[in-house]
Length: 259
Image 1 (cartoon, rainbow, N blue to C red):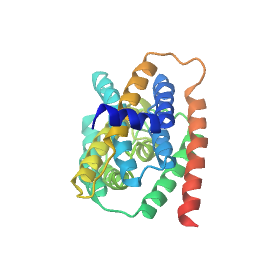
Image 2: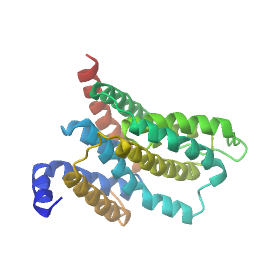
Image 3: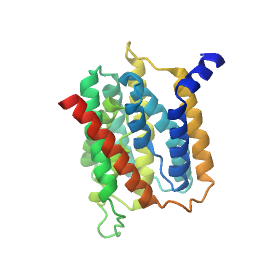
Image 4: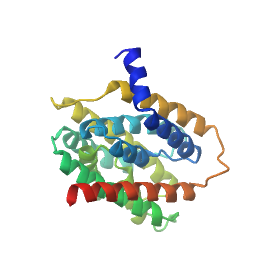
């Protein structure tokens, strides 16, 4: 990896870099990561699917690491409830990342995942469980949730938050703020485990020139967004816009690989 190769990659993929930068600023300014949007853009970019998985996971790690640190400082992470989720998800996310899957299977799984995320974003409403109806800690269910989501997430190259967060809200698992903290930590450990699984596969390949540019872009954009108060878009408006974008991408992918 040299400066000249990085510059060449930047020139060839400038539109991806610009989109990543804009998304990072907009979403971090209202407390979102924008991971699904990154994945959707990569899916349309023409990059080979094995690199899409690794690049998406690395971007996830950059986006959520600071969030996890902040949530830990605010004492929103309930380790007793979270540990069964992440301890079950880590080995299965690793296995999912290690598995060799065909390009067709990858894009079919990705298409359904993005479609699920789009529907969830479009219909989701703020849920505020009371202390009386919060789901009681059930270790077996937490292990099941974490293990299944971790395995699927490792194969696709996502952190699993788009599956976990709606599930925890629907089951009144905890308060919205603690669910957000749980999802961030879950995304971080799953992305790391899935990436390690991919790296362990002898066929692992990644374009470090482009990936380095995107990681720096996401980090800078996220830092700028964290310091801005967005007066133009509300979280709901951004979620609706993202839902439309990734629904379009998911339907395009499914049409291509299913028909």
